[in-house]
Length: 64
Ligand code: SF4
Image (cartoon, rainbow, N blue to C red; front, side, top):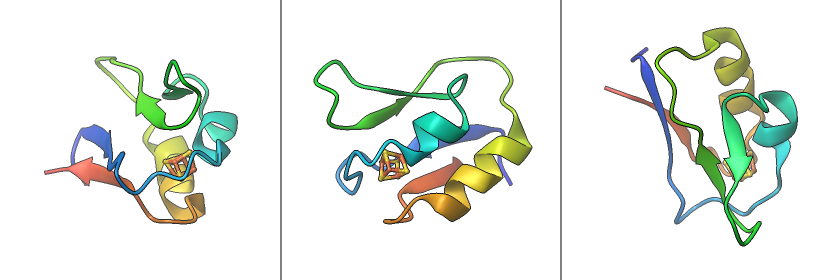
């Protein structure tokens, strides 16, 4: 597990599951079509793990 989380926006289908689970970590982009990571020094790792498992296209990853 790394300490930074990234979204493969090419794969993201904009389902908003991650935003609903971790609104302090993820938000929708300006067009509302893709999720993006909110820049922060620390992230709630447990919540992110849940989002990773919930994402239907598995496009959320820990950055090595
Ligand atoms: S759960 Fe996955 S597909 Fe859905 S908005 Fe988040 S990153 Fe995109």
